[in-house]
Length: 356
Image (cartoon, rainbow, N blue to C red; front, top):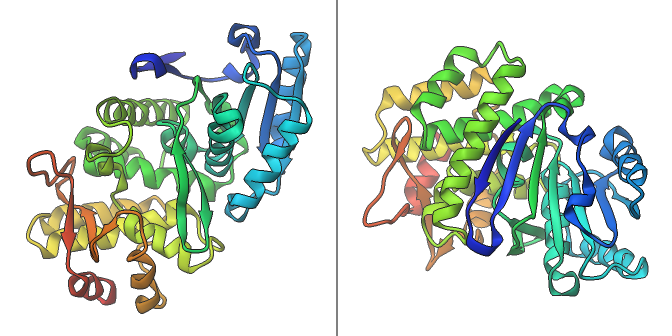
């Protein structure tokens, strides 16, 4: 098992990565008065009941609470419903919530933990590749509203993150690809060696492949969070592909496309924007796009450009009628200037890149 320490003073915690670790956790070490496993309707049957029995076998009080699977459940109403269930069960400040599932489960559970009794402890147990390399780490929580994704949210760090690669065995191939998009993002913006490893191994993924890319991704994200917990600037580097990606998710009503698929398309166009501005060389752009394609991810947006731009203007990364982008200058490195990571781009150039 690998352990990565996220150093945030009194909010520091460990990320544990290994195989079969969800079957070996001693929950008494957390010292909570009672536990709640919050998960979705799919993961409940795959892992939720097993985890519940494990905790019960340790003679601890535990409740298993689920909600309908999918991004459409990540909303203010569902958060309120889950919070009310905790209240009816008598959960107090000494209780612990367990987020067992993918990114939606983690975001929603973390959001509930941040506001219930003005904040209680929770741990992340991500079961998807996407959540393991991205959303479970860093304390970002949130829910979607019709005006945009994650516009209601809070920074609330978990007590621990437990990543068990055994959960990938039941993950559909499309969900594996969903996570590969974020790993490609790390390589493209932060780690040339990771990018080149993906180029050599993207089609022959095995246990060692996942252990390596998850650990590398977790170390990259942990390092960024330690320097910029609340996204003042450096943490914005993680938004590469997300400005356009989130807009694509929004215009589709969070249906019919995964987050990773949208981010993959976003990286293609945001890389093109950087190339048009003279920062990213054409060869590196082509290598990025080829890797995205080899991963089985989409590389084109076919839809309403006007509507997409309208949604992008409402993005939380938009300021003063300007859209800000992370701009790679070569594989493994992005444009920076005096600690600035995101740069304004004119709407006309964004429109041009989306149309071509």
